[in-house]
Image (cartoon, rainbow, N blue to C red; front, side, top):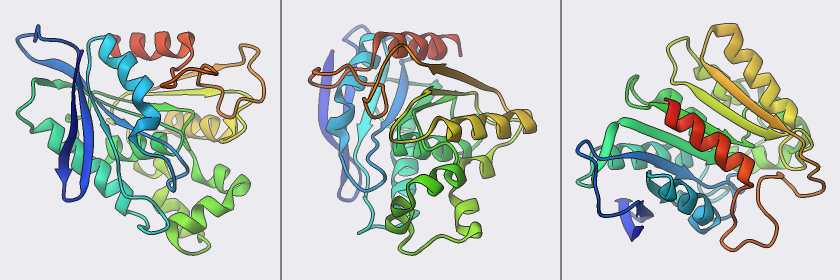
Amino acid sequence: MKIIPDLQYAPGLAGDLFLPGDQVPDDGFPSVLLIHGGGWRTMDRSAMRGAADFLAEKGFAVFNIDYRLAPEYRWPSGLDDCKAAAQWLFCSEYPVNTQKFFIVGASSGGHYALITGLTLPRGMIRGIVSISGIDDVFVDSRFSPERYTALLGKTPTEKDLTEINPATYLAADAPPILCTHWRHDQVVRFSACAAFEQAAANIGAKISVYSYDCNRQFEGHGIWIPGTSPRRLYPDLEAVISMYLDCL
């Protein structure tokens, strides 16, 4: 594995590019834009280092990015950054296969992954993965309203929530989507995933959901193996995500 750190994709914004190795396929490596969580307000790309390692081990080129955080930068600043990073990687000089271009995010990064993938030009994105993501903001805002005050700089109206809700951008021709979610998630309720799944099914979008229990308790999202550094996803999650991406 080779890591090229601190690649600037926009003024003042950078990411680390993980390349699986020196043996480059003729059409380049399948590629992933990787987006961290933190309620749109905290964390940086180091939070996803373990996920980047896992994806690179599976043969993907991974661009693990930072983006502007609320409340200093309000919606849609972070989303604009994710879209800029996707465009940068897609058009970069690095050996990425633009026919196999994916977006993966966790928690609020799952929200950004969904809207980024759903609003970029059709055909650009091969698939989207939301790991315990804020898949439905109407559900999530009832449990964590402070996130939305920080993101928007005000108490959101229904119109505001509609604008930032991933389901607003669903269409029958949307890229295939995988949502993974612990049924007892302490940070983003599983009901947000279920609401998005229903919205996608109603419109005929391609969606798969991996919901799980696995006896995990009181672990926040229930996605990270306790004590790992950098944090690694549980093996079942890594297996489900890699199998899904490989099949697209």
